[in-house]
Amino acid sequence: MSPQPGTRARYAVVGTGARAEMFVRALVREHADTAELVAFADVNQARMDAHNRWLGELGHRPVPTYHASDFTAMLAKERVDVVLVTSVDVTHDGYVVAALEAGCDVVCEKPMTTDAPRCQRILDAVRRTGRRVTVAFNYRYNPLHEQLRRLLADGAVGEIGSVHFEWLLDVRHGADYFRRWHRDKASSGGLMVHKASHHFDLVNWWLDATPVQVYAAGRLFFYGDDGRRHGYARDYDRAHASPAADDDPFALRLAEHPRLRELYLDAEAEDGYHRDRNVFAPGVSIEDDMAVLATYSTGATMTYHLTAYAPWEGYRVMVNGSRGRLELEVTESEFVSPAAAGALKGAALHGDQAAEEGGAATLTLRPFWAPPQRIEVDGYTRHGHGGADARMTQVLFGGVPDPLHRAATARDGALALLTGLAANRSFDTGAPVRVADLLTLD
Picture 1 (cartoon, rainbow, N blue to C red):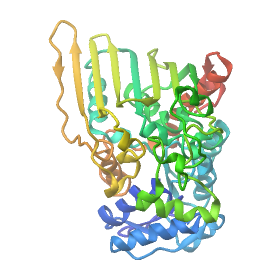
Picture 2: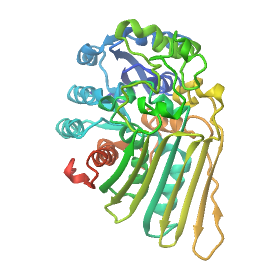
Picture 3: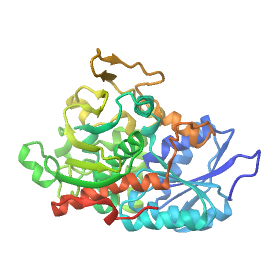
Picture 4: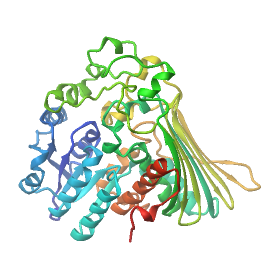
């Protein structure tokens, strides 16, 4: 289904956890002239009710709600043009394929899905239906990352030989993946898929290349039951109503966060989901310390490291080429105080709830035989993922021109996913993994 010329596109959201909030607000506030929110779908009525109450705060009428089992019926009854998929990662493919087959286009939160068979199912549905899937890789829209792409495309460092990429999640943000459903690799694909797909997509986009082979090592070092040896663990399963969590800097106190209380604590009676698990409790099946060596179709290599228990948050990217070196360093938080450790990183809530991120960013070009050049970047802000969220929704919902081709396709989503899946397999086998052995793309 496509909107008629001169009409607003009709959007439905499936998955009404915290990840949906930024998209919902963009639809009903900034892009209400081109987009119309018409329905919610979820497995939990309380979460949909919370979003409808927040819509009222924005002056928007409540929208119809549907249980996820009635998803296909919702598409027809509400005459949906585009589906926003913001559900648990492992469920993405079911909603994406059903939406495509109903004649809808899809905007899917990253990662597009969690394994190769589910990825193939989505790609086959795109080919079969001729509809469009756009993966919400918002980091493409960060002005720093846009400028880095322009410089590389213009030959600022010549032919690219290698990339080094280090990403640090501090003990506030990193811990949060070990409190919730992400701690189960079957649900999230682990941080190589759920988190690092952002980063692998950036490298694919920057290099204009595709991954060929991946060798990786990863382990659960800091969190989980074995992490108790580091001396931080308290004896409780979930933080709410647990006295043992009172002095735990790793405990999330849902009752102190009004929006999280509505979405999760008040919704527990329906599905039993606990958003505030002890990060040192048993049952963690994902890694928290991961190293990757990847080779690309251009011959370039990438070394990548993700740490989920760092004292500060940010990342470093270094690109080495035949004419010099490009360096990007971003500090999002310089440290985490004990009082802030049990809270959430501002961006985790999105929307108006998101506090500005601290720190600074520098982009430096170091040509051969010349002094380094500090590159100033217009438009970079210290909130909303560097200003990326607003810029992305302008393209996705507002029809803003996209000369940098930032809107990631299903194929782009697959390529980002495949690097992480290959890394996961390499963790298990101890051997290099050829990406083509996981999935063959046209």
